Image 1 (cartoon, rainbow, N blue to C red):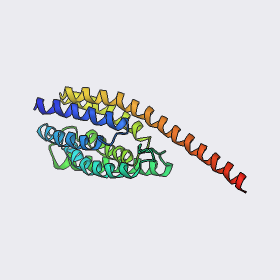
Image 2: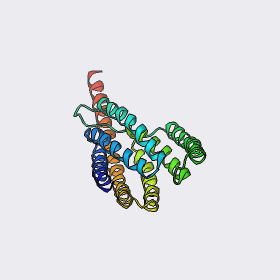
Image 3: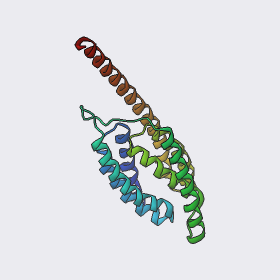
Image 4: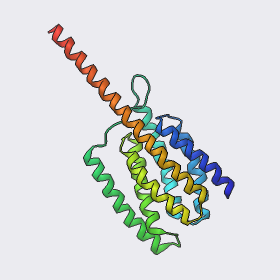
Amino acid sequence: MWLVEIVAVIMSMLNVWLTAGRRLLCWPVGLVSVGLYSWVFFKVQLYSDLLLQVIFAFCLVYGWRSWLRGRGEDQEVLVERLPRRSGMMGLLIGGFGAVLLGYAMARLTNASLPWIDSALTSFSLVAQFWMGRRYVACWLLWIVIDVIYVGMYAVKHLHLTALLYAVFVVLALFGWKNWRQALDRQQRSLKKGQQQNDWVNEVVG
């Protein structure tokens, strides 16, 4: 299993690095990573994580399509600020999903660490959805999730995966910084374009 885990680690790191840089290649790379980790989590009885990988596959397809539609004139992927209402709704859905899935896993399966695993699963889906929507705040949620994942995987003796998630924390910090800078550039460009339009309107008028 260690060989599959090593390849999964490499593909996952590449996926997050490409995502932080807003590269469309992140989506097919992510699909490969999901397939590999589905097998790993099945073997160690982390069923919530296995379920998460399956759902992630659908989220990755959605995100891929969203990014293709969300490019500017220079073909760079545009990012957006998370609306307050969407943020609150996402966190509420994540909390509800954590309780519902945690109860099911604790009662109906022999899952290891069912409650914390379920909470991480639920909020990871929220973060992944926000990423598909190109919300800058997705990285802040990923930072919190990844820090907790480091501890969980260390407890399960998945040391390579724990190391991977420690790297994810660093990459998420890079992604947050990179996306914030991109958002600032977009806003400056939009403001400059608006000023030019106002100037043209004044001249013509």
